[in-house]
Length: 297
Image (cartoon, rainbow, N blue to C red):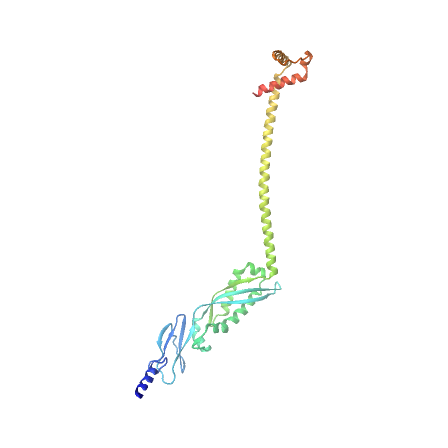
């Protein structure tokens, strides 16, 4: 019984995570770098993603310290007083931040690990956030709100260039950087909305003017056509009148008067016409109208 207990204790000791015979099993996961911490400090070589055992130990066991290497997306929110406008403006800057692979040894020397890991957020808050916030405020304060509204892309490029230069040689580098979610002061927003409404109204007025112009041009063309038609009609009537005026002589009127009398004599509806009435204007007009009708046929 005693021997069996001793055997169980030895077996349990052999399979513990850190044992003097085989060393602890450890892993460097993807997007991480590892360094082995010994009693004399970190080993020189970096350990890339892999699984392995630490060295055997008796009194002091080595440990693996991980460093997060994955690119991180970060957002910084600002509420900045804009000196040129004497107004507050809210905006964000969004960026992609990465660990500077040339500064890994320096990071391990200067940043204390927490539970076996150097956390990215610790690096960012220590080396990047203060510089980024200070530089962004300094650059943005040089612009007016209207300049920010009209030159957002160029300002984002300037921020990227100057923030990247400010972080040169530090533990972190910037891969992407730009303005986002710009919230202009309410007074500016209302002014821009009013200006947009005015522009829209002007465009509507221009469109209405074009419609009215087309309508008036069409009415003008119709009036011109009507005048041409009336002109042709008047010209035709004038020509007919000229022809009749030349052809209807006194002798012709006398001849036509006799024809009228003959028709009256043959008609059941006889009407007495004094001989003197044959030379009146009324009878001549009747004869003239009859001639016009014949001509029109």
